[in-house]
Image (cartoon, rainbow, N blue to C red):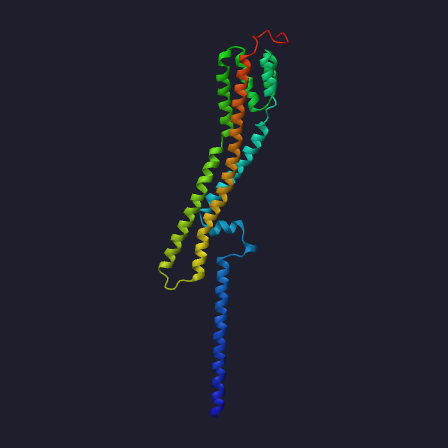
Length: 256
């Protein structure tokens, strides 16, 4: 009888241990499930989750990325349509001015649909009435052309500067919230700590991801404007030099 009781006690103890093991396993599964909800896997990691995990700072960073992309595409299309690098009209206009054929020069300049032709057309038109003011008029029109092409470039520069600062702000706010939450906790969960840190760093990564291509886009567009500035200056100087050696109006080779 004592042996039977001992056997029953052993079975009960084994049952208790098994129950404890089941509870521990269930606890581990629950902890794993909680961690999986805190840190989404690569297959389920979407833009919406990025915005949600990064907090409210991700919204202005996302808006900055859309604004930068819109401005870059718009300026790229605008500059391509303006044909900034087209210098085909410079030679014919300079040759016509040097030979005293001002009407031909004006037609050649006005036929060129690009900033260089616009500036040279203004200079040739001014030479017909006030030759001494032709260079000043060319530089005035050239300045307006450059201002038109530089429009919205300061916005790209601003986005490139402010996006990393927004990301840093989000990281600081996230770290402050993390440590404030840990302050009253007795035991620190390493997984929860890691989750809070990567969420805080997410905004910095997002800010840099926006700033780097935006800065590259600004540099590219600004470089095209700088080349246009050099081309305009060269065209103005060539036209002034050609005008200085041109015969008086009416003594050109074509009798104009």
